[in-house]
Length: 474
Image (cartoon, rainbow, N blue to C red; front, side, top):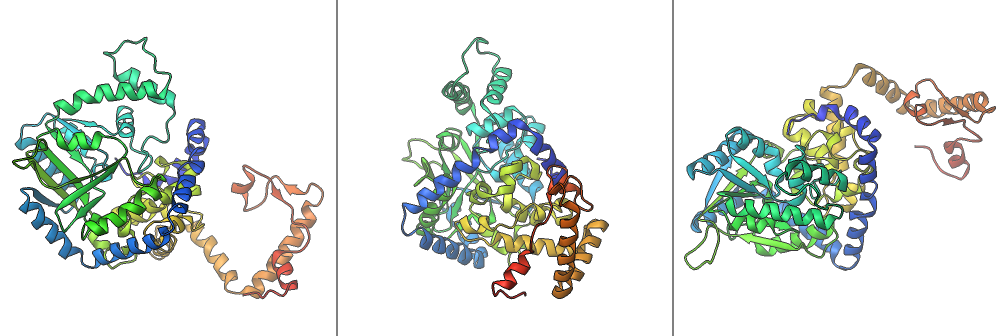
């Protein structure tokens, strides 16, 4: 995906006017969030598990070099191979070289955010291979030539009519008069078309929710059987993951799995949780002949020990995205990055640089809901503030914005003068607006009055009322 995170404001404005998108996003606030709440309520030890999950990730990150080396040794012991990719170009070349070594023509691919980060589909297509997404949501957006708009629900921005249109345009070998009115019809058609791809594939690519140092295993968590078919039917299985997906042992992995599904979709556990350990052994009935794990850095090692260190705890559950009022208003594509929402607003600048994503740290109401629901307790608002501070210190900040903030800061550090000026301003606005009770246009407030009236102040200010009730001004 081509990064356009520097266009967030423009993208958001378009998203707010997209009626189809707004209709799709309207369902998000009552879907995943309510299911997560119910799932957490059913598990008395949920909050304690969050603490354990945080501690596991913190411990692993402190000793990440040790666990990465241990994982590599264990994979090699089982007959597999580990490949280290410093950046996206390294990762792409490694994947292509593996495919070329076995004469691959068709590649099936399970859902993988690292695959999206590497833009591996586009790269393989340029090299003459045919990559096929097998997750239903990813398959749909691949047909539409779109990036995912959500981490766990990549096609959440689409309606049923969009899916039908994509299927009729692509599956031209099927009867045009077929009925695609119901979601079940669309699912059956996708399953039938993908079944052929599974069987024909030379290489299968999956992501990894976790890597386990103790056993050299990788883990995928899905609600579809496509991940298992992708990694067991082809003769070569390639796993794409990033360095922070490491966990020390099976017990730690189990703890993280207990908070992952509940935080993501409100399930006790996902339908499929699959552990892959090396290639097919002598007494195995099925499985790949080759097992390769490509571990991507792409700027993550720079995050260790720095302001965004805690973001490496992220287990990609999307809880922060599901609860974010900004995401619920504009969707994932507005962020211009494969990582949308609050976690993306922290991670994207860390990977690509602040200049390439200068709007994202400000794409937040700072309501704190993201930190409140995070299963590994990542302090996302704190890191967003850190990015904003860096943006202010190092740029880029528009001159007018910098001037406006400097003027505000001058008054903000002088509370007596600030409150006196606010009182005078409120009285003046109250007098000017008492006839209509509101302003249709107001100097320095055009963004507000563009879509709503500005109410004329009435009565005393909040600070006055607070003071009268015994409160103290800070």
